[in-house]
Length: 128
Image (tube, rainbow, N blue to C red):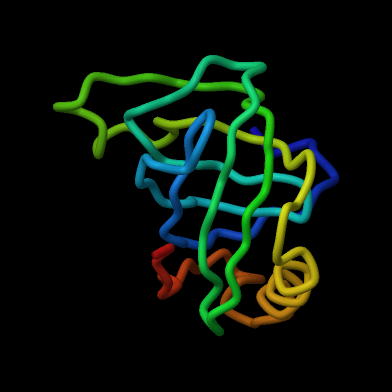
């Protein structure tokens, strides 16, 4: 079934941290858009909760933002890596820092030929 959303989603793996009061849990993105992302994690947070997300873009800019958990799918730890969509989808609410850098980063990956075909290349970067 085709995705009916108008939002352009790009497969991209970026290391991040997230949490309710502070970003302490480690996870990875599976895909991102200008308005949200899918976070692959066995530690999902209840839908409709607000969370803090922090990550570093490949060129070194730190991004911190507030997001709302729109949906979550929790799977047992022993089969986490076997299930395609185990984690949570979040919608960005407000950037605390790094919005301009994130916008520029997203625009750069949208235009890359490998992303048009859906190829996902890991993105270096850890939040420290």
